[in-house]
Image (cartoon, rainbow, N blue to C red; front, top):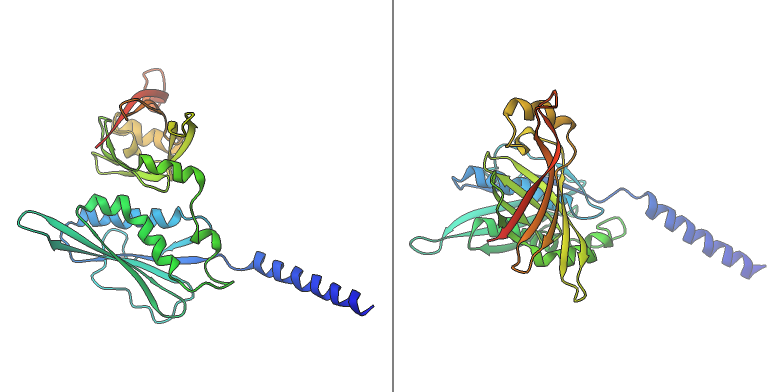
Length: 291
């Protein structure tokens, strides 16, 4: 009887441990944005938004946007007296690297619930290198946080799905569409489109097919987030405003060509005189060329 009771007690203890883990509060990061004194406010705003997107792309991580003002950066580090969650922010400094060159120093900071600050500093030779290459540094900072059953889940620390790894070969800056300034694909399978009208659209990349050697042959790129009239610059502004709210996410189906370009179709809103709104869902040809 004694052995039976011991086994029962052991099973009961395991059950309660599993139940406790299942009901534990999700790991949360409070995001405070960017600290900088650079005069390039438009680029800094873009970096703030991209860092937030990169944090949100990490599996099993809940991110609360705590920026005092989402339209501008902070002039000093946030004053945190007591934090129930991890606090994350970045510092960006513009540094001279020669007569005509500028180097960017970017320090990513995470303040743990233990009150300690964990940091990683990287140097980039261009501002867009920050946007393209920042996610590994962000993950490295989170990886410094103390590990405990109530802290960072293992899935956050090893956020490397097979598809995301395959997508790394496409990471970089692309161009080609008439109304976009650039398209940036990040190594984690995420990215963003910067339109010439100033709008920024977050995107996610999915590998659809590979060849017999494992090289990517076809991808799907999809808009992430809420629709915006500025995502449809080929439409008259009034038509875009009337149609954007009900529009499906923009989606590209692209093949990797022999010369390394991405070529295919884009599903989006197109002008139509047959529609009362002036626009219908349609397709456009699209070619992306890596810079």
